[in-house]
Image (cartoon, rainbow, N blue to C red; front, side, top):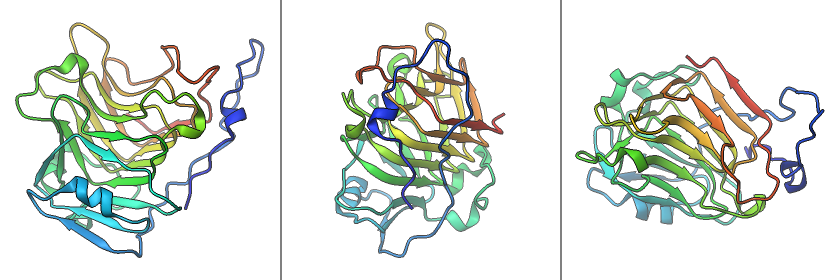
Length: 258
C-alpha cells in the first residue's frame, strides 16, 4: 500500500498568519502486511548494500539477528510501486505489530551502525522502504556525537517531488552512544514517513541540542505513534531555512509517545 501524499502545491502552501490550527487532513496507514516477493537473506558479514541494490519492489531483505552491518547504506530509487522490507531474521520473536519494542530485545535485532556519517542515507526519490525490528547505533568508538545523525532521509532537495517518501521505521531500537550520545536519530526531510512502536534513546549532548527526530525540509505527512523518545528535544519541525521554498510541515500525527 502506498502511503497518501499531498500534492506539491499543498505541501508548499505558505502558512497564513490568522489560519486556524487544524487536525491532520491526511493520516498514514502503517498496517503491517507481509510481502509476497522474494526473501534476500544477508548473513553476518554479508553485503547489505548489494541486497538493497538488487531487491525488487515486493521483496524482503532479512538481516541476521545479532549481526552488525556498518554503513553508510544508500536507499536506491526503485522503478515502479511496491514496498521493500528490511527486517530481522528473528522477527517472529519480537512483539507483534502495535506493540513497542525495548532495549532488552536488542539481541533479537540486527544492528546497523553509523561510522561517522549516517548509517542510512537516501538518493532523491527513494521510496517505499520499511525497517522492522532493526537496531541503529553509532559504530563502536565513534564519539563525534556533535555531528552524528544515525538516519538521514533527504539530501537538500529543492522540490517536494524529489524527496524520499513512504519510509517506515517499525519496532526499531534507535539510539546514541550511552556515554557520548548523538545529535539526531532520524533527520526526516521526506514525505509520508512514520516512526511507530519504536524506542529512541541516548540523544544527548552537552554543547548543542539533541533530538530523536527532526525535520527541517520535510512537508509531511508524518506519523510518530507509540514510541519512546529520549532527547534534549523530543521532536522538532522547522528551525532552519528549508531548501524547498515556502515549505510548511503539516499533517503530523503524534500520539502515545512516552
